Amino acid sequence: AKLNMKAGKRALDGCDHKTAYSYLGAALSLLPGDHWISHYDLSLRLNFLTSSAANSCCQYDEAEQILRRGLANARCLYDQLPSYLLLSQILRTQGNVDDAYNTCSFVLLQLGETIPDSVTPEAAKTMVEDTLKMYEEIYDDDWLERKMEGNTLRTLIKIYNVMAFSSYFCKSYSMVVYFTCKAVQLSLRNGICEHTPLSFLQFTGNETNDDDAVLCYRIAKNAMSLQERFDMATQIPELYFNFY
Image 1 (cartoon, rainbow, N blue to C red):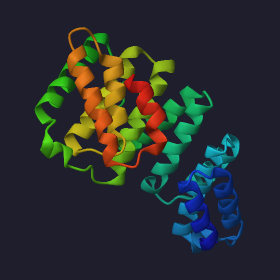
Image 2 (image 1 turned 120 degrees about the vertical axis):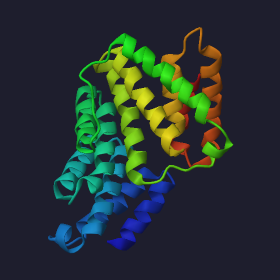
Image 3 (image 1 turned 90 degrees about the vertical axis):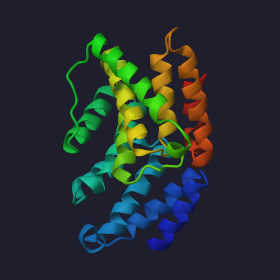
Image 4 (image 1 turned 60 degrees about the horizontal axis):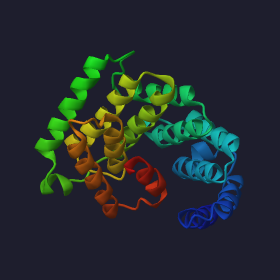
């Protein structure tokens, strides 16, 4: 099982998704019946990789089934976070934006975050102003060298990105603004990670107006330059779409 998982992970990293799916599926089949008890860490990792490969092969139903099986057997919320995030992305890809939003909302509430039922245009405008001010105060060379620590924070910023996208289709524009601002502020407070560029680009794409256009364009260009610091090959299309 471990050898097949290693081969599947290598194929997944090389974007050979069908081969990865084959190897990882074989690895799952080789685990004993009580593998969630006897080989918990291996099961958790293998379950996530297999669902990732299934998703990349457009086997969305299979990917969702594998993820939900992993969520049911995971021992704590922090072990569930990667699966919840991937599940929300799969739901979003299938057009189930309400389910994607509700999945992310559930996770954020479990993490102690608060989610308003609605946001007024006035409150959204204030959040944008506060975020731009925070950017001007914090963005410098020292901040650029500060890496976001902890998988939970990195997952949280990605969840905000998914919620911003989903809100565009199932909530008000002010809610989109709320989540994009939350993602940017989280990164400004805690440092950069592989999800920071998309957060900044979503923010500038939604919040640009005549008064802030020059500043937002500068933020967007700076965000694009951050991709050199991380392995972001899978995000390139979405980054450029948001930038342009």
